[in-house]
Length: 359
Ligand code: NAD
Ligand code: GLY
Image 1 (cartoon, protein in one colour):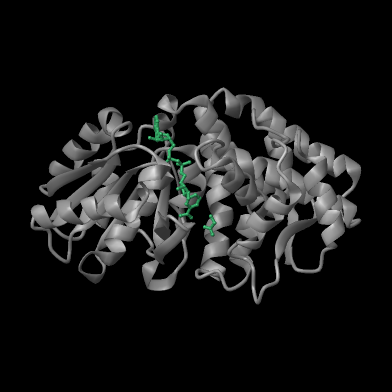
Image 2 (tube, rainbow, N blue to C red; image 1 turned 45 degrees about the vertical axis):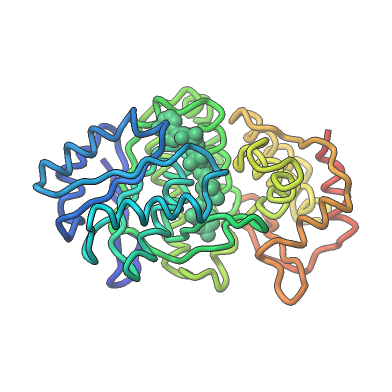
């Protein structure tokens, strides 16, 4: 098992990464009160709930559960309320812990519920998708969707601890594994050319779910995220780098309708568009763009998106959270492994980069 810490002063917390981790011993120091609400969904609960329930009960804690339907479409206020209902029905108090057992949807919802319930209770993340292990469980962004926008209602709520168990990835569908690899590739492209070389050497093993390689990829990804979050918890600056590929990706997801393409798939094409625009700006070479495409394709991710009318693509991009004072900012690459946030890009070149990477 490897451990790394998100250094946030008094709110510093560990991320435990390994296989067949023991929740009883690892979670014990981080459950402060007597009551634990495990929030999971109808897919993950039959696989892993009993193990966590028994491990925490063995610590002498009271455990209650809230099992939500599975899917991004349930990441809304109506289903958030079900978590509050469960907490109130169980009579839980201000020193209870909400434990998220699932992917990013469950992590975001359970975390937001823990931030709101009695103005804030303890929170633990047990991410069970690769995407949630490398991204959403770390850094404290929690929330729900609103009919008018994704992740528009939320709070920063850091967990007490994150427990990322590679054994749980055995049951993850292939498409979801690849979507997680997209975010892994993101860390390499935005800040670590050595990691990119490592991914090029090990992508086949990662796709075949070699647990040691997956643990190494999760560790290196979380180390990047932890460092960025420690420097810029509330996204005043550097944290926006984590959105490499996301502005283009959100346009793809929004146009196709959420659920049609997975987030990681849309981000993969978005990263190629960002690389292509960086090339057109004279920053990356044609070889760099090809390297970006190659690693994405080897992760079994798409490299082009369906045809989307340009005016609609641009309109969706203009709704991005990185728009400041009406001005779009993009995360582009000065080199592979060195991203920047910039509003200094040529809009015509951006249009070309979008059109060049559609089917
Ligand atoms: P998800 O939570 O929908 O999980 C994907 C699918 O895998 C679901 O059907 C789920 O039930 C299933 N699943 C989960 N673990 C499994 C396992 N071990 N075995 C078998 N099936 C399993 O999707 P996700 O990709 O984990 O997360 C996406 C969500 O995360 C989005 O809502 C996105 O907005 C959010 N997100 C948040 C942050 C953040 O910083 N908070 C960052 C990135 C993404
Ligand atoms: N997923 C982007 C962030 O956490 O900031």
